[in-house]
Image 1 (cartoon, rainbow, N blue to C red):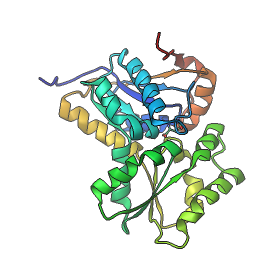
Image 2 (spheres, helix red, strand yellow; image 1 turned 135 degrees about the horizontal axis):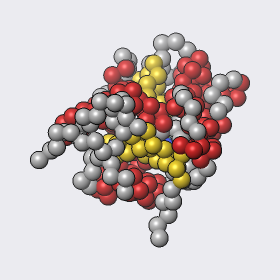
Image 3 (cartoon, rainbow, N blue to C red; image 1 turned 30 degrees about the vertical axis):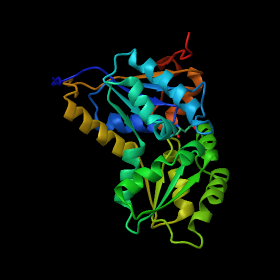
Amino acid sequence: MARKFDNRPIGVFDSGIGGITVLKALRARLPHENLIYLGDTARLPYGTKSAETVTAYATQATRNLMTHDIKMAVIACNTAASVALEPLSAALDPLPVIGVVGPGAEAGVKASKNGHIAVLATEATVRGGAYLRAIHALAPQADVVQKACGLFVTLAEEGWIKGDVAEAAARRYLEPLFKGRQKPDTIVLGCTHFPVLARVIARVVGPGVKLVDSAATTARAVELALTEKGLTTNRRGKGKVRFLATDSAERFARVGGIFFGEDITAKQVELVDLLPG
Ligand code: DGL
């Protein structure tokens, strides 16, 4: 029988630091929940790797999160959620697993009025086509164009989220999507790193194009699932956030602060080893 309350933490997994955008949305929506975030910073990026490698890495990482007695796993990494959600759910069964692709697709479909939707993501996410399938499941007539924007990940990691270089990259990626075809009225930021570049992207595509990401919709999906399964905390005070990473606590803290919107110190970041054996 489902428990009424559950004070165990929610595990949030990403290939690196960008998933903190999802962590932030979870904290805003579920302030009393304890959250434990694991970034596989030693093996970032996942977005350029094969589905097999991403699945193997993500399975090791989420199994590590399970050792912290989590009550649910949130796959904040779009690449892992795109290519590995099914094997991950099977590997972690009976733990509930929520990925960001479904909620991101839902946000895109809700926002679009003309049915033309652009999805910006990593190469692996685009290749896997999970956003395409998720959007078409909700809106079969939608015209979806996907674009791999790998350099955005590097720019965000470097903290170059505004200025000439970011704008030139955004133009190069986005202008072709708005030429000679029905213009998308909605862009789904289908990668953890892209929300921090939203201002530059918005400037390049101009007004009238909505930018959506999966952070807020994922947080809502998590809240719903917790309620349905009787897994919500009954804690009254503010929940704690714990950070785990597989490499460089200093870098995690420095770049993580950009995504979290508040300072993270290297001391707050615990290093973990995911390699088997
Ligand atoms: N977390 C990845 C994603 O959301 C971006 C970074 C990477 O390539 O690992 O797709």
